[in-house]
Image 1: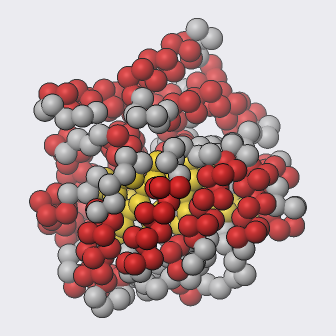
Image 2 (image 1 turned 90 degrees about the vertical axis):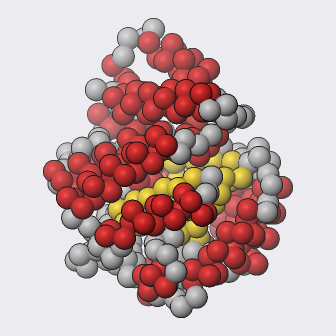
Length: 397
């Protein structure tokens, strides 16, 4: 089922209901529902969709971690420059709502904050997400402080990677002393008091830490208490050069983790942007488990339609799992529209639509859930329950 075939009277009512119930501060994520019928039509018919609402930019493959679940640090390309990013953002305009700036380690770029602020000037995104390993404490803290002050109308989400406690984290990340540096960076970010900052922790659940996850979850809740705690499954991705490494946990073990994650969300209800993420994540965890178990596309995938990924050298991918270029922005005047309507893009969208691939990629799942009516209703119901819990305990929503 998709939103394209709802009666015409239902869409305005659905959007109004969700808007009134779940508007968070000035954030209106459900404004993106206006684009959903066009994404539905494009996926169903093969016509060229509008530009994606969800864009990820890998700003560099360089990384100062050597994780057991990732080999991206081995890769080298000629990274896009700040000037090139400005040209990309200028051509994009205000089409993307949610931008992610990833790596490698994004803060290894001294001009990362300038790149992100350029996206704010040209694109006015509602949400910007930046994952980091937290090793560059001073640069991360000062950079985030500058971001939240110079982009006050954008929600800035910083997710620090946490894959274990103490030396276990260091072993998985391949850097002695990483855990101590992570805590130092986390403490520095906690001192930034800004309403548009969400400080989160992010765990990749792999075969290296799946058996230790429950104590890690308890540690996060009892000692660290971030605004947001999210997880995703270690995937074998072309982007990360991990295909064939066997890093993904078994579906049986991950299924047990999902039960703990669902119970944790029900106990530790968050407010604001973190609350929205929780509502999506509660449904995503079930989808990810079923995807591993059934080895098929459980959620209709809108990668290449509602979401896309831009590599450090300007290659455009539908997603980072397949990482198959549909064009390169350097070759088309930095105009995503020209790549978006290419024959290669159409062929890859067709492959995805036919279910020739499946994965639990969390980033793409967010926009796919917005485009899938059963998932959207489930997320909405999760928000209703979360808001009710907050009201019962007297916490600001």
